[in-house]
Image (cartoon, rainbow, N blue to C red; front, side):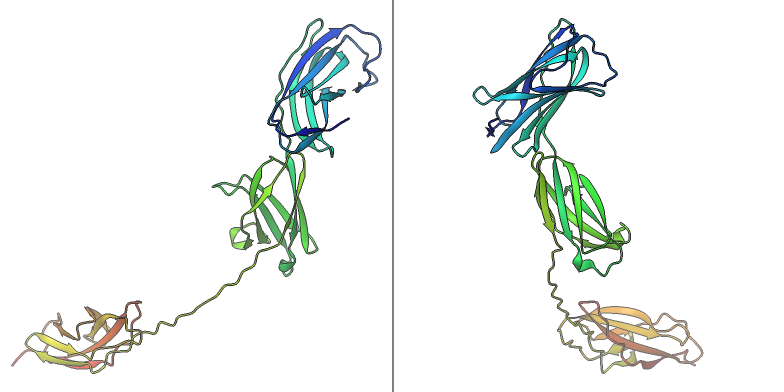
Length: 353
């Protein structure tokens, strides 16, 4: 049989003519095979003329090896190789000696290497004394992806699991799980893949498929699946370098020359301006302690331009002067606060006698 260059053929339209006869002779004729259970007696039979029109668009740069029509019903099988006419772009043949009734018809188009390229099926009713015709659309046969994974870089993990994730949308189109039993690699076969371009990536896990056990998530890769053919893909983990640059952000120095004195407006607290090494001063915080049991409390936050603050304690008058301790710290734009200055004591006056 000569091979037909398959440049642009998309669909296969079948015109089927069925005819029935009552026959008591043998089944079959040259060019096709018939299989019936030995215990099943022959009954009314008919024939089926198959003519397949090969329409444009089925594929590019593919060559037809053969086209076969198969009728099946339970264990009954009738097969016929169709003759390809490259001039009229048809494939035709006759199946005779077919028992009447409903059959499943399947037409397969094979390439030169016997790979299934396109296939289609339909239910056919062969009736006595009638002609049966139907149209059948062929679709591209699914392909297969064979991925050889090099996992030698993960030899330290006693149990290693993984996933092939297909489709980079919100939800994966397909997930194929695998486990490394022994050795440095794993071969994963994914069957019945639609013939098209697929996006996939590899995820590796230790022990279980929980997210916290994920030790590797690879970049997206492309795999092209062709009708009826296996696609080989070799995979190894992708590695890169990470440059870590550490910047030390020192806290600002503590304010110095802190003083506290009384005047008519309250307690005047002053200090010398602070200049941090990074020149990123944001401001100052003023603290006061009214007694030993309350600790120092923040009483004011000031901008970097201020170096004085009047503090008016909200305390009742006592019998004697009350010691109050004050301290000041500085804070930079990164939120780092300096040590508080050594406390300075001032006496808040009691009642006059």
